[in-house]
Each structure stands twice: as C-alpha cells, then as structure tokens.
Amino acid sequence: MKDENFLRSKGVNIDASLELFGDIETYNLTLNDFLGAISEKIENLEKYKEANDMPNYAILVHSLKSDAKYFGFTKLAEFAYEHEMKSKANNMYYVFDHFDELIDEVNNVLSIVGEYLGKTVNTFKVEQTNNTNNGDAILVVDDSNIVRVFIDKVFAGVYNVISANDGKEALDYISNDKGNIKAMLLDLNMPNVNGMEVLEYFRNNALFNKIPVSIITGEDSNDEIEKALTYPVVEVLTKPFNERDIKRVVEKTINSNKF
Image (tube, rainbow, N blue to C red; front, side, top):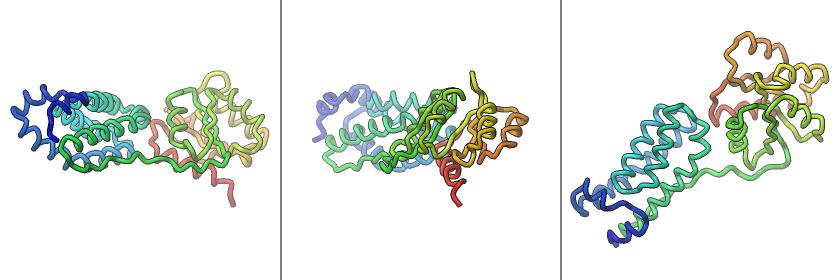
C-alpha cells in the first residue's frame, strides 16, 4: 500500500516524521528496521518488568518512546513516556498495572505498519492468567490501595483476593470465613488495628494452623520485623516487591500447612 494518507487516517503524524527523515523512501526503509528490532525490545521490557529491574526498564522504554515519536506514533510515545517516568520513580506497581495497555498500543501500531507496508506482522500476546479459580481466597491486609490492586491483578483468575485496609476489617472477614481463605498477606503498620494486633489475635485464637500468614511490609524497623517473627509467620516480604516475589510467597504460604 505505502499510502501516506492511510497513515494520516490512522492518527500517525507522518508530516512531522518526514521533517526528520527527509523523504518517504527513507521513512519506509527505517520503518522496516523498527519492525526488525521491536520483538527483542518488547521481550526485554517484559523481562525487566518481571525482574522489577526498573532502571533497565526505564532505559528501554525511553528507546521505545523515541522510536514511536520519530515515526509519528503519538499515542504509543505518550504511553511509553508515562512508563519511563514511573519506572524512573521506581513505581513498579504502575508499570505492572499498565503494561497490558502499552502492549495493546504496540500491537495497534504494528497492525497499522503491517497494513501500510503490505506485510504480515506478528503482534504480541499479553500473557493471560489461566482461569482456574476454584473459590480459594487469599486475604490481603494493607492500607495501601496500590499494593492491594497490584496483588489482585497478579492473582486474577487463580484466587479470589479479599482486600482489607486495616486489621479490624481483616478480622471481620476472618470471623465470617467458611474455610475459603487459604493464606493471609499482612502489613504491619496500619491504622485502627495494626499487624501486630492481628498476629496476637491469631495466636490467642489458634488461627495460624487454619490460615497461614506471611508479612508484607515497608517497615524499616528491624525490631518490628523481629517481633513479627516471634509469631509463626511463614515469611517476611519487604516492599517494593515484584510479581515473581509475591507469587512465590503466596504459594509458599498456602502450602506451608500441607504435610
């Protein structure tokens, strides 16, 4: 096809791009180079996201932003810019929560480019969690909505994620539990009823064998963490954590009572 008006109709800022490239032939040749490099770039973005390697993620998504801007893919450049800023701020929760949107826009660009060049272009599949939820639940107790939403997204389709923003709300859920809660992830520093008070309640009511507990905390006090470890908690995971870490801790916590 190679029709400039087609690109314009799809929202591509081809006129600004031609000011950079000089002519449409150079644009087209360089666009082929973009196609040749995009697969490795997206694979590495995924790898850095999974490893919570925000410095390298920021470098690579900056490159994606620059490419998108050069070729007139304005929306993709905007998405990549947001990811660059958030990853530079070490906000891995934003990166994780909005990664699918970034890949969707990459796929949109690839579809446009493929049609424009008359080529078959492979798009990227965003990994979907298998929908194997059998009613089992994990209780996430944290006053940070960002953390609760992040964990809910990680386990979508695998476990029901019950969110509580303080210990009192968590204990209300537990008092009404019918055996569905298989593990609890507990923050220490919360308003109303804090994590230590929840741990003490568990000890006094012999609940640790029914609902195993792991600590998720940004608490910098070693004394506070050491005090939590006097209770039979499975593990302590400090914030910020990544998808791989939280999956590992949840599975370890759930399986801790299986003999």
